[in-house]
Length: 115
Length: 116
Image (tube, rainbow over all chains, first blue to last red; front, side):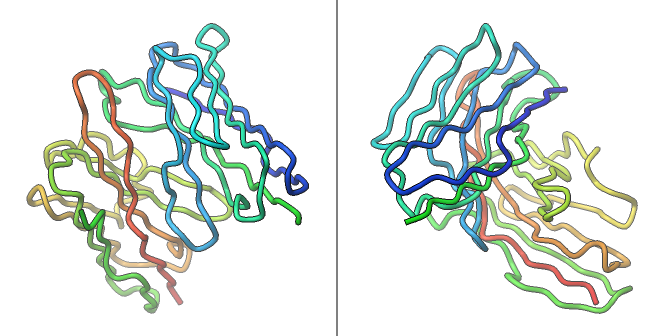
């Protein structure tokens, strides 16, 4: 099955700096890549997603890039704020076959933004 | 839309007791997922359903765990008998598919389970 690796496991940045979280995947058939943010004691919430026919997607301070050849995708947060502090999860999905509908999650990155 | 609804939000029970967690997916969603989250193991997929049929239960830890989806708007995850190592946050999520593309999974608020 698909294997998603996520790095780093922890990331500390100063407020206003940028943060980058990277993920790799193993199945070249994967075509959907969402990112989730989970604040302490809360549920994971989708913050942005990208499909394999797109190389980059932006939403205000958040952007995601996808390199299909290298099988990796990244989350970029610019002008970080303390409220960005949370655990971020990447995921991948093939959207077909026996794993249809399933997301394979990375282990998560604890992001801390210091004021 | 009310989102994915889970109950109870918190459950504290003694070892050996039966525990039943409940989930109502978003209306119209045909996929339902049960996850377990712990500090040690992260977010683990236990089982998922498509159109009320279990597709993959390979993540269910052992026979003490069972899950059902009797209809499109309700699912249960049961642990019998419960053990302290089952203590975790259990999330339910639902999604749908558009053509050949998956759509985002939407998570419920989770059930925080403590087995004493």
